[in-house]
Length: 179
Image 1 (cartoon, rainbow, N blue to C red):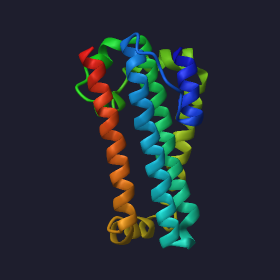
Image 2: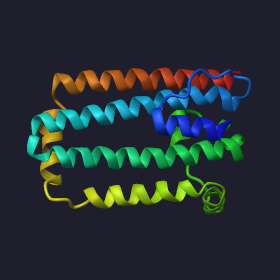
Image 3: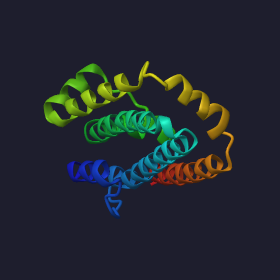
Image 4: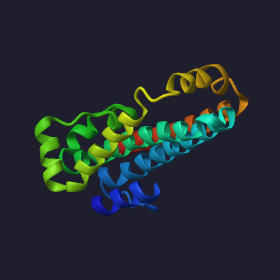
């Protein structure tokens, strides 16, 4: 079930409705909604940056890609932990804590052995980060984000939508804990 869920989430961001027979089934839609919100937010930020600074459009896309690569790697790790150490996931107080859980080195080794694609996700994350760290124009892009984009009404709307999605996902997670 989780391999199917992982593929659906990583490819499309949507795995369809789940029947909440277990904690794992219950939390999956919350994780999906949080992921969808993050992807929507990152795409929106890249579009706003590109509109504000067309000469940095490629770099804005690279920065978005780095954020999404980190998310895909983290998502796969969390889904694996949900399969192998669900009690740790159940011990989290919030969905944010779940998504930021760190796996022990031996868990990461086991994940790499069980899913060779995880290593590819790690490499993609590292490559995406290397592409943006110290890139020409990155300081300018950050300044445009701070001084123009972050104070724009379009960014406020984007942030509001992302916050709403995260709040719905958090509510879904809390429902799972109470069942």
